[in-house]
Length: 493
Image (cartoon, rainbow, N blue to C red; front, side):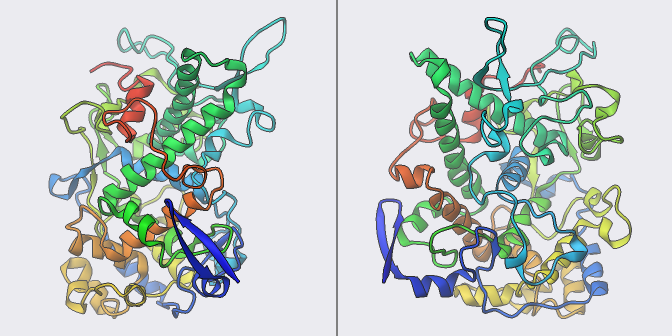
């Protein structure tokens, strides 16, 4: 019996048995393994902690550690995307080596369910209403929150439509409250709310009836989001042209029969690359230049000093609205003020002392390494061999101050997958891009979850290309999205 699998207009055939041997699961739609036959790597906590402490980026904002090819906004787009496709509520100390028993409470799709919830019928609190005939019927638009004036200047003395919608307690009315855990991911979520609303306006301007335009607006918004994730975000951190090459050749390692699953090699290792991209300080807007990474947690409804407190305000203060010019390439022929940090084994000092955590669990690097051991991830070397790509040598792994610690504990020969992928990016990609193991896992999983979604552009219309206005017709980037919204810098320079 054969199963036909489409790849961007091309079709390949594989037996169901061969797909089953590759997928490492029975299509649970939950978590699974890309490399189920590889042995788990076991390392003691004391050794993991010493390795984690060697992974400190100090200082966390020096120019030599910047990745000029990846603006800092992609760090938080990456976090937004992560929240769109994964949610594992299992406490770290209860995670174990069988990922098939762990439920992913998010759909493994780039479907913006964190934005749309379950739609206006089931999640009406996410949608705007209008007064008509004494009632308050839902519109085709998503609800937008308003800021609280601060009076610093003419702009900030006004109420601005630049916050997430919130209830009376300051908690965000959004499909995933994790998108209100720091100000930059919250403003990214807001941008996608505004993107959908701008698409509604675009359709109405073209003659559509607003009362019946929601589903079409959602399709256009979601397909452009899928495109920019694959071709703008993923190809920035992997290789230009990699997505189309895999579409043509077929996925080799992330395979499934019917339903995409979330591989732990991706969720617990490769996609934790974003922690290496975090800066210690950001140029946020003209009022806060620079501002510390830690301060960006204060003005949120989830991570402030008190839940829903927003630094003592009822909604986001007007002077904390983001200037997108500082985070994405929204200005022609100019670089944003904030670059992401290099893809390497070092993470910002702030991430080594997480608030509200005690002991080793306050160190995010330790948490990532420990999670990999708990979930039974194989070594980076074993994954590279299974992929038949160049394996980092023991001397390469032992290079640098972090490498000395790795060598001390034998991790230069048997390396935790997360650390290996970051070291590979440093050595093979000069810190600007991932190396071959990281590239392939990231690109195949993202391409696979889009292709496995029967509502995606790859499934419905494999030769589709973006239709909204953009700097290059037929393409669409995060900067194009922000320019389409027309709200790049609400406070002015």
